[in-house]
Image (tube, rainbow, N blue to C red; front, side, top):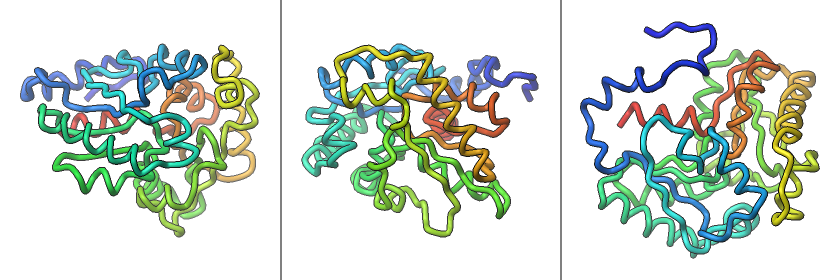
Length: 256
């Protein structure tokens, strides 16, 4: 067992070493379906350079296989989920499965809406969104606590997304979006402009702390795959566990 005062500083490679001896890494074990090449604007590209973000290879202690999906972008995934793009995602995922990839995920939590369709099309595990962790996290909390969900855009996160990943009406959740952050909002209003990462981190932490003031939040789940770089700051400010894209990736990796 590894014991440390700061789990974020644990060398995960040591934890995984026994697992890696028993699997071949000739083919990356997890495939990541991403937005189309050229469809990621300047603001979001800044996040792809941050360890913790889904599109940054340095986020993981194991190799992953990225696949840019034609037609996938902020509009066809987040604003208006497109059946044609879903079919393209299925086709690309089937190719990766044939190549030996052992699980499939996506680089945007809003792909939760496609969870069942993607999972039904493949013979390997599919985990489209960190929101899949919400039912599990809920079981860890007492009956008076809620799961705090922080999302890229609250207005775009619907009951259909929730139902697709097993979040039922009896699960106590509280959702807040990042729309109030002027720097984050630039990703949608002025996507070709740079954003201030430090200010966005402060805004995310303030949102989490504000949620704590209003409700008994037992743990946080971050829907957006670009804000896990701020998970440590949220944990430090709130004293609560934070589950994100990275925690789900490690969970699945150990399983396969």
